[in-house]
Image (cartoon, rainbow, N blue to C red; front, side):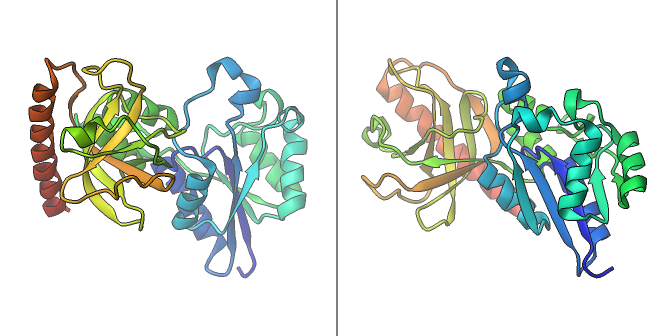
Length: 305
Protein backbone atom coordinates (compact mmCIF):
# COMPACT_ATOMS: atom_id res chain seq x y z
CA UNK A 1 0.00 0.00 0.00
CA UNK A 2 2.63 2.57 -1.05
CA UNK A 3 1.77 6.20 -0.58
CA UNK A 4 -1.29 5.62 1.60
CA UNK A 5 -2.25 8.61 3.76
CA UNK A 6 -4.15 7.90 6.97
CA UNK A 7 -5.73 10.73 8.95
CA UNK A 8 -6.89 11.08 12.53
CA UNK A 9 -8.64 14.21 13.85
CA UNK A 10 -9.04 15.47 17.39
CA UNK A 11 -7.70 17.58 20.22
CA UNK A 12 -5.22 14.93 21.45
CA UNK A 13 -4.64 16.80 24.71
CA UNK A 14 -2.26 14.73 26.79
CA UNK A 15 -1.53 12.18 24.05
CA UNK A 16 -2.82 9.53 26.47
CA UNK A 17 -3.30 5.79 25.98
CA UNK A 18 -6.49 6.30 23.99
CA UNK A 19 -4.75 8.65 21.58
CA UNK A 20 -1.84 6.24 21.36
CA UNK A 21 -4.22 3.46 20.29
CA UNK A 22 -5.50 5.69 17.49
CA UNK A 23 -1.97 6.43 16.29
CA UNK A 24 -1.02 2.73 16.37
CA UNK A 25 -4.07 1.85 14.27
CA UNK A 26 -3.34 4.69 11.85
CA UNK A 27 0.31 3.66 11.57
CA UNK A 28 -0.69 0.07 10.84
CA UNK A 29 -3.21 1.18 8.21
CA UNK A 30 -0.67 3.47 6.53
CA UNK A 31 2.04 0.82 6.32
CA UNK A 32 5.76 1.45 6.25
CA UNK A 33 5.58 3.43 3.01
CA UNK A 34 2.55 5.51 3.96
CA UNK A 35 2.12 8.56 6.15
CA UNK A 36 0.01 9.35 9.20
CA UNK A 37 -1.44 12.85 9.51
CA UNK A 38 -2.91 14.10 12.81
CA UNK A 39 -5.22 17.11 12.47
CA UNK A 40 -5.06 18.74 15.90
CA UNK A 41 -7.45 21.36 17.23
CA UNK A 42 -5.60 24.06 19.15
CA UNK A 43 -6.77 25.72 21.25
CA UNK A 44 -9.64 23.53 22.43
CA UNK A 45 -12.90 24.13 20.48
CA UNK A 46 -14.56 25.01 23.79
CA UNK A 47 -12.72 28.34 23.65
CA UNK A 48 -15.24 29.27 20.94
CA UNK A 49 -18.22 27.07 21.78
CA UNK A 50 -18.19 27.28 25.60
CA UNK A 51 -15.68 29.92 26.71
CA UNK A 52 -16.93 29.68 30.31
CA UNK A 53 -16.10 25.95 30.44
CA UNK A 54 -12.74 25.56 28.71
CA UNK A 55 -10.84 22.55 30.12
CA UNK A 56 -7.38 23.15 31.52
CA UNK A 57 -4.62 22.20 29.10
CA UNK A 58 -2.56 19.08 29.70
CA UNK A 59 -0.15 19.84 26.85
CA UNK A 60 0.84 22.78 24.73
CA UNK A 61 0.69 22.39 20.96
CA UNK A 62 4.47 22.00 20.81
CA UNK A 63 4.34 19.23 23.44
CA UNK A 64 1.57 17.43 21.57
CA UNK A 65 3.46 17.73 18.29
CA UNK A 66 6.55 16.17 19.88
CA UNK A 67 4.57 13.40 21.58
CA UNK A 68 2.52 12.55 18.49
CA UNK A 69 5.62 12.51 16.31
CA UNK A 70 7.34 10.17 18.77
CA UNK A 71 4.30 7.89 18.55
CA UNK A 72 4.56 7.60 14.77
CA UNK A 73 2.74 10.60 13.28
CA UNK A 74 4.45 11.97 10.18
CA UNK A 75 2.69 15.34 10.03
CA UNK A 76 0.74 17.37 12.58
CA UNK A 77 -1.72 19.82 11.03
CA UNK A 78 -2.99 22.42 13.53
CA UNK A 79 -6.67 23.33 13.23
CA UNK A 80 -7.67 26.71 14.64
CA UNK A 81 -11.23 26.39 16.01
CA UNK A 82 -12.65 29.41 14.22
CA UNK A 83 -16.42 30.02 14.19
CA UNK A 84 -16.35 29.40 10.45
CA UNK A 85 -14.68 26.00 10.81
CA UNK A 86 -16.84 24.91 13.75
CA UNK A 87 -19.95 26.07 11.91
CA UNK A 88 -19.23 23.87 8.87
CA UNK A 89 -21.80 21.13 8.34
CA UNK A 90 -20.46 17.61 9.03
CA UNK A 91 -20.50 16.52 5.40
CA UNK A 92 -18.61 19.61 4.25
CA UNK A 93 -16.03 19.27 7.02
CA UNK A 94 -15.08 15.71 6.06
CA UNK A 95 -15.28 16.55 2.33
CA UNK A 96 -12.70 19.31 2.89
CA UNK A 97 -10.42 16.89 4.73
CA UNK A 98 -10.80 14.34 1.94
CA UNK A 99 -10.07 16.87 -0.81
CA UNK A 100 -7.06 18.28 1.04
CA UNK A 101 -5.34 15.05 2.10
CA UNK A 102 -6.88 12.28 -0.05
CA UNK A 103 -6.83 9.80 2.85
CA UNK A 104 -7.10 6.09 2.33
CA UNK A 105 -8.51 5.89 5.85
CA UNK A 106 -9.68 8.11 8.71
CA UNK A 107 -9.11 6.59 12.16
CA UNK A 108 -11.24 7.67 15.13
CA UNK A 109 -12.71 6.50 18.41
CA UNK A 110 -16.40 5.57 18.78
CA UNK A 111 -17.31 8.91 20.41
CA UNK A 112 -15.85 11.03 17.58
CA UNK A 113 -18.13 13.97 16.74
CA UNK A 114 -17.57 16.56 14.05
CA UNK A 115 -19.15 19.47 12.23
CA UNK A 116 -21.67 22.10 13.28
CA UNK A 117 -23.29 21.34 16.65
CA UNK A 118 -21.12 18.18 16.74
CA UNK A 119 -23.85 16.60 14.63
CA UNK A 120 -21.56 14.18 12.78
CA UNK A 121 -20.81 10.78 14.33
CA UNK A 122 -18.94 7.63 13.35
CA UNK A 123 -21.94 6.24 11.49
CA UNK A 124 -21.96 9.32 9.25
CA UNK A 125 -18.16 9.07 8.93
CA UNK A 126 -18.52 5.52 7.61
CA UNK A 127 -21.20 6.63 5.15
CA UNK A 128 -19.04 9.53 3.93
CA UNK A 129 -16.10 7.15 3.59
CA UNK A 130 -18.06 4.96 1.19
CA UNK A 131 -19.05 8.04 -0.77
CA UNK A 132 -15.65 9.78 -0.82
CA UNK A 133 -13.44 6.73 -1.12
CA UNK A 134 -11.81 6.28 2.27
CA UNK A 135 -12.15 3.64 4.96
CA UNK A 136 -13.50 4.72 8.37
CA UNK A 137 -11.61 2.78 11.03
CA UNK A 138 -13.15 2.90 14.51
CA UNK A 139 -10.82 2.03 17.41
CA UNK A 140 -12.32 0.89 20.75
CA UNK A 141 -11.63 3.09 23.81
CA UNK A 142 -8.46 2.33 25.75
CA UNK A 143 -8.73 1.12 29.33
CA UNK A 144 -6.27 1.28 32.22
CA UNK A 145 -5.95 -0.28 35.66
CA UNK A 146 -5.52 2.29 38.43
CA UNK A 147 -3.57 1.91 41.67
CA UNK A 148 -6.78 0.92 43.50
CA UNK A 149 -7.28 -1.85 40.89
CA UNK A 150 -10.31 -0.17 39.33
CA UNK A 151 -10.54 -0.39 35.54
CA UNK A 152 -11.37 2.86 33.77
CA UNK A 153 -11.78 4.20 30.25
CA UNK A 154 -8.95 6.58 29.46
CA UNK A 155 -9.82 10.17 28.62
CA UNK A 156 -8.26 13.62 28.87
CA UNK A 157 -10.92 14.69 31.37
CA UNK A 158 -10.03 11.75 33.63
CA UNK A 159 -6.33 12.65 33.46
CA UNK A 160 -7.25 16.19 34.54
CA UNK A 161 -9.32 14.84 37.43
CA UNK A 162 -6.41 12.72 38.63
CA UNK A 163 -4.06 15.68 38.54
CA UNK A 164 -6.52 17.94 40.32
CA UNK A 165 -6.60 15.37 43.14
CA UNK A 166 -2.83 14.88 43.26
CA UNK A 167 -3.03 11.35 41.88
CA UNK A 168 -0.02 11.66 39.60
CA UNK A 169 0.77 7.92 39.77
CA UNK A 170 -2.68 7.20 38.32
CA UNK A 171 -2.24 9.97 35.74
CA UNK A 172 0.91 8.08 34.70
CA UNK A 173 -1.18 4.93 34.22
CA UNK A 174 -3.56 6.84 31.92
CA UNK A 175 -0.82 8.62 29.99
CA UNK A 176 1.64 5.74 29.75
CA UNK A 177 4.36 8.10 31.03
CA UNK A 178 4.80 10.61 33.87
CA UNK A 179 2.83 13.83 33.58
CA UNK A 180 5.16 16.64 32.46
CA UNK A 181 4.98 20.41 32.67
CA UNK A 182 7.45 22.84 31.22
CA UNK A 183 8.09 26.53 31.55
CA UNK A 184 10.64 29.27 31.56
CA UNK A 185 12.76 29.46 34.71
CA UNK A 186 12.07 32.73 36.51
CA UNK A 187 13.67 34.42 39.49
CA UNK A 188 11.77 33.57 42.67
CA UNK A 189 11.96 34.85 46.24
CA UNK A 190 15.08 32.66 46.81
CA UNK A 191 13.75 31.22 50.07
CA UNK A 192 14.86 27.76 48.94
CA UNK A 193 18.42 28.98 48.64
CA UNK A 194 18.25 30.45 52.17
CA UNK A 195 16.91 27.11 53.44
CA UNK A 196 19.77 25.25 51.78
CA UNK A 197 17.53 23.69 49.14
CA UNK A 198 17.74 25.87 46.00
CA UNK A 199 14.94 25.39 43.49
CA UNK A 200 13.93 26.50 40.03
CA UNK A 201 10.57 28.27 39.76
CA UNK A 202 8.20 27.45 36.89
CA UNK A 203 4.85 28.97 35.99
CA UNK A 204 3.64 26.62 33.22
CA UNK A 205 0.65 27.32 30.99
CA UNK A 206 -0.60 23.75 31.40
CA UNK A 207 -2.39 22.36 34.44
CA UNK A 208 -0.41 21.74 37.63
CA UNK A 209 -1.26 18.86 39.97
CA UNK A 210 -2.96 19.62 43.28
CA UNK A 211 -0.92 21.56 45.84
CA UNK A 212 1.54 19.26 47.55
CA UNK A 213 4.97 17.69 47.46
CA UNK A 214 5.93 15.16 44.79
CA UNK A 215 8.95 13.23 43.57
CA UNK A 216 10.07 12.88 39.98
CA UNK A 217 12.64 14.29 37.58
CA UNK A 218 13.54 17.71 36.22
CA UNK A 219 15.57 18.73 33.17
CA UNK A 220 18.69 20.86 33.48
CA UNK A 221 19.77 23.51 30.91
CA UNK A 222 21.45 20.77 28.83
CA UNK A 223 18.24 18.71 28.75
CA UNK A 224 19.52 16.00 31.10
CA UNK A 225 16.87 14.46 33.39
CA UNK A 226 17.82 14.49 37.08
CA UNK A 227 16.03 13.20 40.23
CA UNK A 228 14.03 15.94 41.93
CA UNK A 229 11.75 16.76 44.82
CA UNK A 230 8.92 18.97 43.58
CA UNK A 231 6.58 21.36 45.37
CA UNK A 232 3.36 22.76 43.93
CA UNK A 233 1.61 25.56 45.77
CA UNK A 234 2.05 29.00 47.27
CA UNK A 235 4.31 28.19 50.29
CA UNK A 236 1.67 28.87 52.99
CA UNK A 237 4.28 29.24 55.75
CA UNK A 238 5.42 32.44 53.98
CA UNK A 239 2.82 35.10 53.27
CA UNK A 240 2.19 36.50 49.81
CA UNK A 241 3.40 33.61 47.68
CA UNK A 242 2.08 32.89 44.18
CA UNK A 243 1.12 29.37 43.14
CA UNK A 244 4.01 27.80 41.27
CA UNK A 245 5.99 24.65 40.62
CA UNK A 246 9.37 24.46 42.36
CA UNK A 247 11.88 21.68 41.73
CA UNK A 248 14.92 20.85 43.85
CA UNK A 249 17.63 18.57 42.49
CA UNK A 250 18.16 15.75 44.99
CA UNK A 251 21.82 15.08 44.24
CA UNK A 252 22.83 17.99 42.07
CA UNK A 253 22.91 21.77 41.79
CA UNK A 254 21.05 24.24 39.62
CA UNK A 255 23.15 26.93 37.90
CA UNK A 256 22.82 29.91 40.22
CA UNK A 257 21.29 33.15 38.94
CA UNK A 258 20.59 31.69 35.50
CA UNK A 259 17.10 32.43 34.24
CA UNK A 260 15.15 32.36 31.00
CA UNK A 261 15.90 28.76 30.01
CA UNK A 262 13.16 26.16 29.55
CA UNK A 263 12.87 23.52 32.26
CA UNK A 264 10.57 20.49 32.30
CA UNK A 265 9.37 18.61 35.37
CA UNK A 266 7.94 15.07 35.45
CA UNK A 267 5.66 14.04 38.33
CA UNK A 268 6.08 10.38 39.27
CA UNK A 269 4.59 10.11 42.75
CA UNK A 270 2.92 12.00 45.60
CA UNK A 271 4.60 12.53 48.96
CA UNK A 272 2.32 14.71 51.07
CA UNK A 273 -0.12 17.61 51.12
CA UNK A 274 1.14 21.14 51.34
CA UNK A 275 0.86 22.55 54.86
CA UNK A 276 1.74 25.52 57.01
CA UNK A 277 4.65 25.04 59.43
CA UNK A 278 5.56 26.76 62.67
CA UNK A 279 8.59 28.67 61.52
CA UNK A 280 11.52 28.36 59.13
CA UNK A 281 13.36 25.64 61.04
CA UNK A 282 10.31 23.35 60.93
CA UNK A 283 10.12 23.91 57.17
CA UNK A 284 13.81 23.07 56.80
CA UNK A 285 13.48 19.78 58.71
CA UNK A 286 10.42 18.70 56.74
CA UNK A 287 12.06 19.51 53.41
CA UNK A 288 15.00 17.33 54.45
CA UNK A 289 12.62 14.45 55.12
CA UNK A 290 10.88 15.05 51.80
CA UNK A 291 14.19 14.89 49.94
CA UNK A 292 15.20 11.67 51.70
CA UNK A 293 11.86 10.03 50.88
CA UNK A 294 12.07 11.21 47.27
CA UNK A 295 15.55 9.75 46.88
CA UNK A 296 14.42 6.43 48.36
CA UNK A 297 11.24 6.17 46.28
CA UNK A 298 12.98 7.10 43.04
CA UNK A 299 15.63 4.46 43.72
CA UNK A 300 12.88 1.86 44.25
CA UNK A 301 11.16 2.92 41.01
CA UNK A 302 14.44 2.61 39.13
CA UNK A 303 14.94 -0.91 40.47
CA UNK A 304 11.36 -1.91 39.64
CA UNK A 305 11.70 -0.69 36.06
